[in-house]
Image (tube, rainbow, N blue to C red; front, side, top):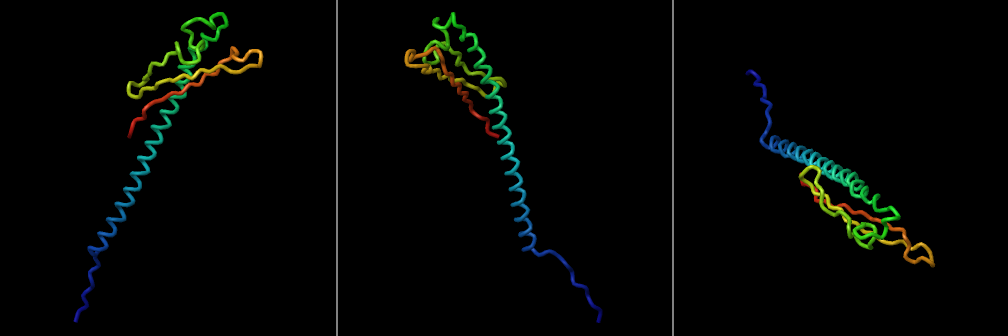
Length: 131
């Protein structure tokens, strides 16, 4: 009687298990790529905001002149952001960056409690794009 070789084949259970494992691996890889893309977009927005901080602070150099210190419309004259340009700016037409100035007087000494020194804190806010 001749010997019939056994046929080697995959069972349905092996196919289902390998499909589940492969789908888990692909899902994990997709999540890694999406997280990387989100991180890149966030970092790009932060770098842009840092560069724009200089754009929003540079005009204040003109207000530092001593002969114009107490003139009206000077951004650094008041204790608030009166006269400062706070209009939103959008370099790419998609994300809008909005500056907010917080200007305060610094205490110099006891004879001059409200000195002529000012501290400017610039906060740039924006809405990030979702990937």
